Image (tube, rainbow, N blue to C red; front, side, top):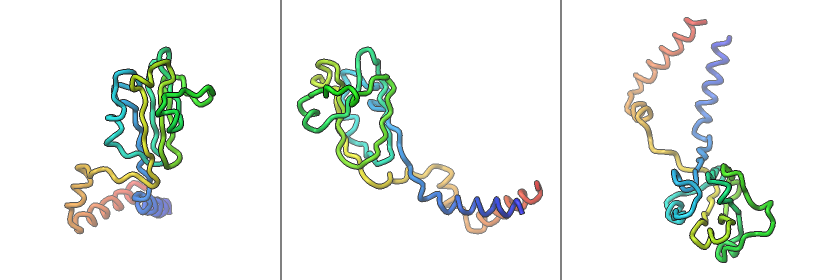
Amino acid sequence: MAVHRSLVIFAIVAFMAPTISLAMDYVVGDDNGWKLEVNYTDWAKDKQFYVGDTLLFKYNNASHNVYKVTGDDFNSCNVPSNNSLGLFTGNDKINLAAAGKKWYICGFTGHCNQGMKFKITVLDGTAPAPPPNAASTLLAKATNFQIVLGMTLSIAAALIMV
């Protein structure tokens, strides 16, 4: 009975797997992190951001911070007077919860004007699947007989262990 229940659970998980979202975590600036003299426009230009993805800002909090701002504040490098809009830990994670344009700047004097800012467009939906790895390529090349044989041997092994 326990084996039957396990097989049903496995089948449900296998059936649902293609619908699971592939949310991404992005470290802003990659290895450079969030600091001066990094071109964040270049960093973001080839990336597609989706609802559910996260941005991680890594920086020295003695000399930088992060503010999520409006498009107008982004263009004019205007730092909001409301500190509740800022992040200050040096290891700040932002969940991209809604589709649309997002703008981020450093609020330290002059940093935004020196290029410490970037904008992204967050897309609705799910990210495309990553390219196949060696295991999925191997499975794609397997014949139906090999797949059935592998499943049969796996079930037999599970029954023997019970």
